[in-house]
Structures are given as structure tokens and as C-alpha cells.
Image (cartoon, rainbow over all chains, first blue to last red; front, side, top):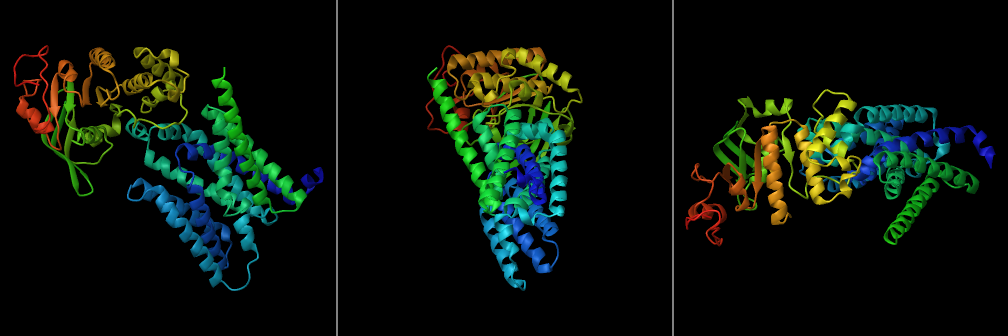
Length: 273
Length: 247
């Protein structure tokens, strides 16, 4: 069983997996409490149109995907903040448009693209060194953001009106947050694909929220649960020779279901005390 | 002192509030009364900087927007619309009020604790605010408003959901806080009975400023009808005042 850990591509996947676990654990709880869970779906689909545009242009899809994802994230943020269209409506429209645009652009490009399935459902064999560098760069940005701005984010997430009155630059902090979500989604899309990306950022945080009460504990537990799910998913996919993306998503969802049982049992014990 | 001149607040093309001129004297308790949808919250949100407006607001002779860039206003939002389910301790909530102060985390905590003590909430320091009762939450949010060290305290219908005894205790608390911190208090309320007993001045708003006798804290029947409509039944409170026309 341990022979897989000697394989270079598995080592690289585990490293990116660890990066994703930390990034999801730091960002995910804020997404959950700000009721923005749908945003991962919107941005990951936006990433697909960026990838397709990169393929059409014959350049590396990664930088184009970053531009599309960050652009879409900030656009969704702008439409919801200006209050003209609600966040879920703009995501609901934009994510199917982004997907349609992606398929349209790919059909315009000549030749057969076997890697499209990899972009849609993830393929750890396709992870390159550039993906690893991007992941480490995003990890650095997210850790720096968390160190410098998590207090402001807590205030904003708890009570945005008062945070504004108290002097927190809520607009700037919101757009920084949206840009970091977008960058994180690009890294996750590389790992588990467009279709499955949002669950990695949401499910571990949702599971942790069901199990512990303190915010700092939710963050730590989110990281641990995401890491365990990713590790289990990779081992499972290697042993069963199946795609890693769905395998990881099975585990994050399984952990989420377990967390719901855990909460039920805990509540039952409290009631019968 | 707060000076309001030609204030107009619009939602899209609809004018929600229009106040030609109003001065709010410093160091006093001002009550804002008016019907639901009459613009009380709109006025308060414009005052604390949460809503854009046309016209002029000055605070202590300084332009409102410039004032808000440098100062926070102590603000207690309407009950039920105050905060999310985010897990945050009472101490952290009060620390929010200290955001503008350039002080170490240690001093920030110490100051926040002092304000929690003023509201007799120090035993809930490490409690998640969402696990406390409505009354306890209200006190912690009041401690947060005081922690801004603003000389203006604005309360948006803080009495919603309180029984008369709790209302009376709340008014006593506001009066005590106003006197000990030398604050200007502006408080909106549906209640036109209790509030007249405590407030120094009553501001009547129904989409626009409804003028009334400045010297009187009690509204006449005509003024009351202008504010709430002629079909509202009027109950006389003889223990408060004796004139038949008064409300």
C-alpha cells in the first residue's frame, strides 16, 4: 500500500492536496458563514471558459483560467454588492453561460482534446510543476491574508454594517476575499476538475461547523478533515484505479454525512442529560 | 450638535425621506417617532453613514462624511437585523468598537472588558453571543456602541419585543449611560407613551419631518393624526398629563 507514496506524481498530488486542505480550511468557514456556498460553483465554471480560451489561443490554459476566475469572482461580488442583482441570481446565470462559452470555444479549436475530461473531473497525473508553484503561491497569499485580515473578516462576517461604521474598509476586504476565493478555486479545479471543485472548499468547513463551536476550532478542523479526505481519496483512487477527483469528493461528502450524525448524537445526549 | 439641511434619501426613484431642516442638540435624549415605513430607520442609517443621501449633514460643525472618516458613531441596530450566526465571543464583539483606536491587542481587550463591566456583562466575556438571550445580546451590543467612545449614541427601535417592565429598565439604563458618558442619544421608537417620559425632545418623522410645538414633549391630537393618520384611536394617559387633546 505504501509503494504509492514513493511515486513522484503521487508525492506532488499529496503536496498540492495539503495546500488545498489549508487554503480551504482558512477560506471555507468564511464562505459558509457569509452564505456564499454557491460561489464556488460559479467561479469553477468560469475557470472552464478560461481554460477553453487558453486552448483556443494555443497558450497555457492556467494564466487565462486565473484571469477568467478572478474576473468572474469580482464581477459576481460587484453585482451582489451594488444590490441590483442578488449573488445567487448572478451566479445562476453566469455559471451556465461560462460553461456554454467554454464548450463553444473548445469546439472552435481544432483537433481532439483528451485533457478536457481532466479539466472537468480532475486528473492527478496531469498535475504539472507549474500547478504546484501556483498552489504554493496561492497558499502564501491566503496565509498572509488570514494573518493580516482575518480579524476584519470576522467583524464583517458577524455584522457588516457595524464593521463599516467602526472603520473596517469592508468593500476592499470583500473584493480581496473574492479574488482569493477565485485563485483557490483555480488551484482546486486543477486538482479535482471544474465540476467537483466547489465541494472541496465547502464540505470540510460545513462538516467542521457541525462538530465544533469556536471559529478557530472550525478552521483547524476544516483543514484536518480536508487533508484526511484528500489523502483517503488519493489512496482509494490509486488502489481502485479510478479517477482521483470523484474519489476525493466521495470522501469529503462521506465526512460531511458523518459530521451530521455526530451532531445528531451530540444533540441527543445534551437533551437527555 | 447635528445639523441637517435639505436631506433627501432615495431608493431608486422613490424618495423615502425628506427633511428640509433639523438641528439635534448635543448632550440630550432625542426620540424619533413615526409610523412603520415612515423613514425612522432610513434617517438613522443616513446619520451613521450606511445610506447615501442628498443634502447636508454636519456634526459639531464638521461635514458628516469627513466626520465619519475619522470617527465612529455608537450605533445599535434594530433587533433581529443586527448580526449573523458567526461564532464570536462577547469580548470580540465589543472589541469591534475599538477598531479605529491604534492600540495593542492587550489594551483593546482591557478596554472592551471595561465597557462590558459598565453593562454588567463581564461574566459573559468568553461566551458566544449567539448563545445568549436577546436582552444579554442587546447589552453586549450596547457595550460595543460605547466602546467606540463616540459622543453620539444612536439606537434604532431597541425596545422591539420587550415587555413594559423590560422597556422601563432599558430606559433607565440609557439615561444612566447618557449621563455618565455625557452622550447625545438619538433613539427611534414606535412607543409614544414611555418615550415622552424620558426624552428631552421628540422628532416626528413620516416620510418627512412633521412639525410640532418644539417646547412640548407631548403631541397634540392634530400632530398625532398627521403622523399616524386620522383613523388611529387615541388613548389618554391621565397619569402623565391632563389636557384632553394630548396623547
